[in-house]
Image (cartoon, rainbow, N blue to C red; front, side, top):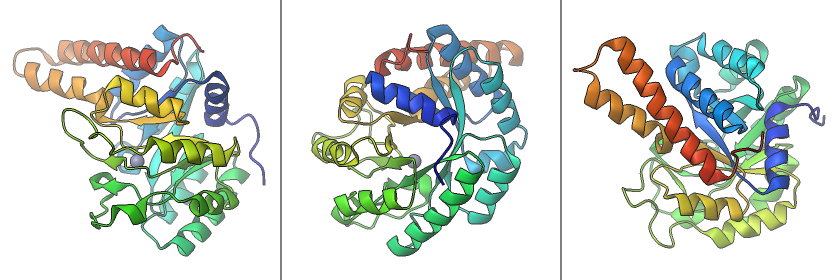
Length: 288
Ligand SMILES: [Zn+2]
């Protein structure tokens, strides 16, 4: 079943693909971060995808509803996406009970055949509810998923056959594995040659606009590396620590000397400014 064209996440990403810019898919862990990134989108007139982890939905059950309210009241295009949903029962609960626009159905902890079959079934159920689906092809290494380092990185990269198989499973957004990792690269970002831009470009060419590309694992990215990924075809840019670190640092440095209300207010300002900076870097500022 094809997805209705009014899906917010896909509208945002299709516009970005046509306009050749990237869109931040920014993780929020609480209402303050959610508010700051939405304020950044409004002030920069930029599209934005709000991302929540399944663990956050359990920790803060009302946050998805707050995010949905922000999506609805915003004067710029914003959507709500659930990142790395790995539990089938939870995915079904999310699609049936929460006002989300898209879900990353991450079955990458199963072998390829089972991964594809589970993805296909869940994608159909999501589409019936107007929800877009992202999936990870290959396997992106790192701790965010709780996946152990296998020491055989080459086998984890996205191959051309993976791309076709996932498109056949009827997904909307593909998160390829091109040397990107979940977790930290180190202060200087990815090492020279660690990210395979040629592989990303080949995947983009092979996809030929049939699905959209999401880039995971952007911690420590210098601006020019993110821009290179966008030029190579990545449109949805998953960001977590890349943007949130300023909030963490601000709270750590000021928690003992500021009152709680000003700490939160000033922290939100710092995070808004940082989000705006990355919207400029992605080229999404002024595109809403
Ligand atoms: Zn990820």
